[in-house]
Image (cartoon, rainbow, N blue to C red; front, side):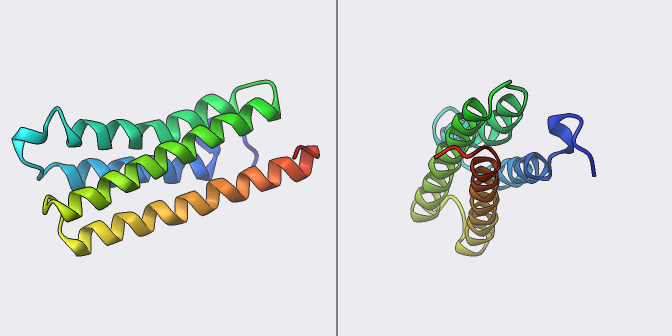
Length: 124
């Protein structure tokens, strides 16, 4: 499949799936967390596909790789907040583990894309 826009990237599509999972997961958070952890988790999740999209449209592979690094950072932030939410009892272990696994797979896919881009363009 030819890539015309960021929407054609499977990694962006998987990122969007992750965001949907995060929104569903945080819907049951206490209302007292609306402007706290709920907001923070959602913002970090939204940042993942957003940075993939923004980086894809840059003219430089090096800059694209920087945006992918930011995406990974946001994903790690989000996964840390999910783990905290499990500890605080806002998320049950089963649902939390499911989303953490989704995030782990997404991180591996982003890292694979980074490796491919580096090899293709001989960037270290």
